[in-house]
Length: 257
Image 1 (tube, helix red, strand yellow):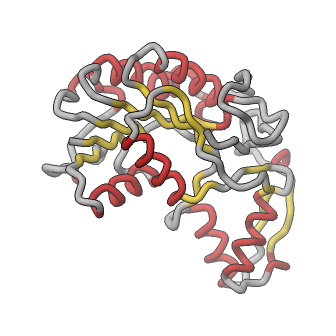
Image 2 (tube, rainbow, N blue to C red):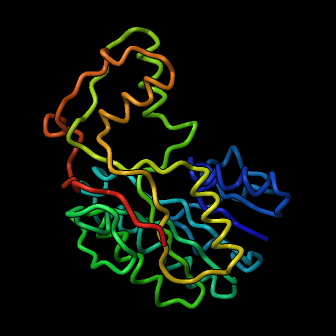
C-alpha cells in the first residue's frame, strides 16, 4: 500500500491521480475532514502521532509550508511543519520500505545555475534553511529519499492560470522581470518519483527543470502558447512588492541526478 501525505496539494493530487490510473493501491491524506473517505485518511501535520503508518510500504510527503514569506515571518510555526513533523513521520514509518521527501532548490544560495547534488548547501531564507534541516535529518534514517525540485508547473497552477484569464480579458498584468525560476513540468516530476519508487532509491536526488528564466519571460511564453497579446504583460521588480519577505536566489535550476 502507498501513501501520499498532502493529497490536497497540487503535486500530491497529481501523484495520487497518476498512481490510481496505473492501478496502484494507495491512500492520499487530507486535512479537510469533509473530504475524508476510505482512501482519503485525515492527517494533520501538527498531530502526526495520531496517524497509523504501519500499513504503508511506500510514502511520499508532499505536505509542507511552502509559502516562503510565511516561513520568513513565522519561522517557529513553519519549522514545526517543515522539520519537526517530518522527524515524527520518519520515526513512525520506520517499518516502511521507503519515504520520499520533497525538497527544494532553495537549499542553495542561487549563486550559479544547475546545482549538483553534492554542491555545498547555503540557503538564503528560512524556507531553504528548514528544508536543509529536513534533508540532514532524513539522511539519518535508512528508508529516506529526498527529491529536490525547482518551480513545478501543473495544469492547475494558480499563477499561470490567473495570467491567462486576465490576458484573455484584455487586462494588463504585472510580472517580475528580476525574479527567476526553472520551470519543471509535473509529468517530469511524476516520472522521477515513479523511478525512485521502482528502484527503492535512498539518498538525495534532483529533478532537473528547464533553464533559469524570469517570471516575466515565462509569462510571455505562456501568452504565446495561447495566442494572447504579450504587450499586456508589464515588467516590474520584485523589490517593489510588499509580499516578498525573503532573500531571492538569482538561479534556481538543478542538474539531474
